[in-house]
Length: 327
Ligand SMILES: [Zn+2]
Image 1 (spheres, helix red, strand yellow):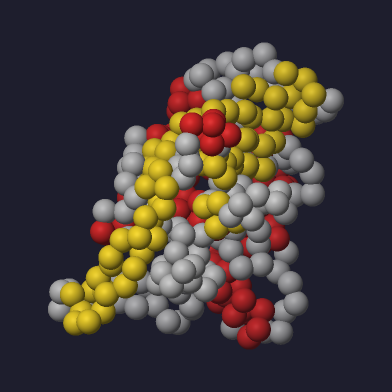
Image 2: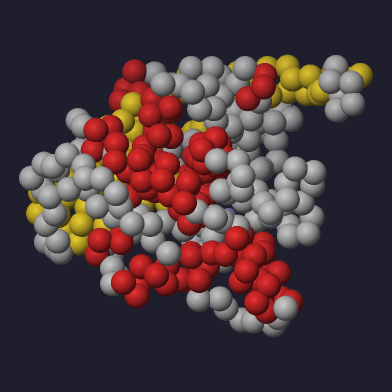
């Protein structure tokens, strides 16, 4: 990926569960519970429930995919991350995972690496932001830990609930298949997201997800169809940073890149202007803009960019042409 730092965005927020939450631990069970909540040991403290950054990133990615899919369905603008090429099921044509397609390509033609600019240029909207096999992406989510504020007022509460295994054929309860779930019913977690070297539409997409998370429309973890996983967020910080540049309006990579770079990576040219950014705080070479109070207004043109980008993209056309050229 671009070997220089241009811009970044950092959003810090608290996660406040509304329904019981279950983020499954990959570990062996705790005290004989079939599905237990993931825990961490930190700074020599007692074990505490936490939410891994990978779970948060997965949730935000899959919600982002839904948004992109609702903007266009022919061709579908995003891949299915776990579907291998040539193993697409009914209704999944042309949606195999970008990352798995590149893996197969490298194996089939004994190619060691594909330049990251090509990977970026040929990837779907979701992989461009969140990455795929062999390409790390621009988006990072930190682990979410219990907030100090919450810890002052109380302890997290974990309860054991009866789960009933659903028979896959009949949709009814499978005979004799009861199991226990450990769910969190009290606790608040703080975390942050970071997006480095963003195109403006990527910030627009992230903004749409944050907006729905604020309103409790996104679900997290296990058992979404069983009344688990509803939460809302409280945004604590929203900052945009530019390296060694003072700017007046929100802008993304294409503005700072040469024509050659823009073509090589296939960055999407920005369309409208945002309202002026506040005066930055200067920290060495970094110019930091605090948009916590008006981020929705600032991101409005970024959402317009997203809609136009999804409209304009003919993914997976270029990817399929790339594969075709080798045959
Ligand atoms: Zn993809």
